[in-house]
Image 1 (cartoon, rainbow, N blue to C red):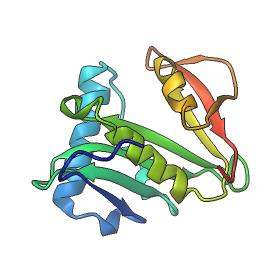
Image 2: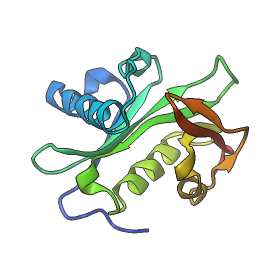
Image 3: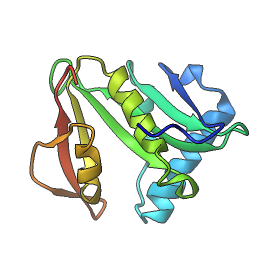
Length: 157
C-alpha cells in the first residue's frame, strides 16, 4: 500500500451536514471540473443522491483544503437488500498517479463493511478497480458517450 503524500488527509462524512460548506463546494467543483468540463459530459452532477439517507462522502484534502480526490457511497437497498454503490470517484488532475484515489477507494470499501458493492467503472479503469477485487458483472454500456462497465465486489472483502 502506497502511503499518502505528505500533508494529505482522508476524511469521511456520514451526512452532507457534517461537511463544512467550503469543503462541500470544493468537492462539487472538482466533480464538475472533471466530469463536466474535462470529460465533456453535460449532466446534473448534483442529482440529489448525495442527500440520500446512508450516503457517505469520502475525500482526501491538502492542508489548505484543496480536494485531491473524493467519492460517494450510496445505499442501493431498492435494487438489492444490503447493496452499496461507490460513485463519483474523482481525482484532481494535479494529484493523479500518487496513490490518493487508491487510498480513498480502500477507505470506501472499508466503510461498506460486509456489504456487496456495485460500481459503474469507466471501462478504461476496469483493470485499476480489479486490483481492489472488483469483477465485471455485466456488459459494457455507454453513459454520457463514455463506455462504462458494471463491476461488483462481494461483501466481506
